[in-house]
Length: 251
Image (cartoon, rainbow, N blue to C red; front, top):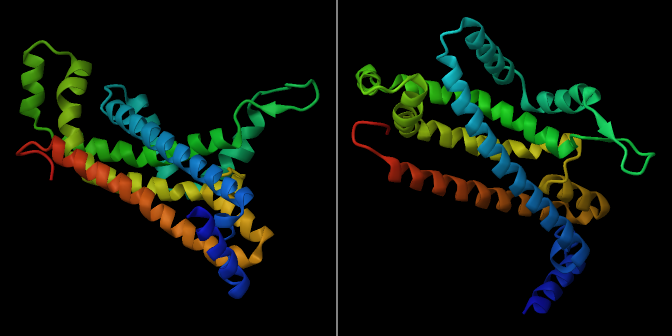
């Protein structure tokens, strides 16, 4: 069956060169696509998790009684929300990357301790995290003051109130906006190509640079893969939202 499919697409490339699905019948190109897909999944999953953690922590710090803490968080938000993620990737990798320590595994070659993949994760996570901070802040503000006062009357301190009372309710309010931001984050991972992260777009561009007739086929695959990835995320978030719904809170 697999051989028949490969033969069909090999013949299609011969009869219609503008539609060369070389990654289907050439095992070398298939491996490149799978490596790129795996890297895209890793980038997406890690960045989604880190951005949510940053959002939760940042929203807590925004309510700090210390003014300088709130100012630092606000400065972080303004920096990452008001500059393009592409510029942020370049800044982290080329500017900050010059100041990171390196090591020499063979005594000759100097290798930075943070690779291009690491910088992509850091940059994209902080980018999406800045939006998540504001999303969670609005969710926290939607929790009634009477609810917070009730928890404090039971002997909870501010941190306990935030973790056990405010955050679970704020999550329910924030999920629709969080869903949109995480979808945008997954799509933004394609910009990691500018610092040579070998994700899916990087690998597909490399393939059609080697085989110009494969350009159309590569872009079709790119389109389909992101429809599937984003679709899985949206379905998962919607299911989570329905499961966490409490009457009177959230959408």
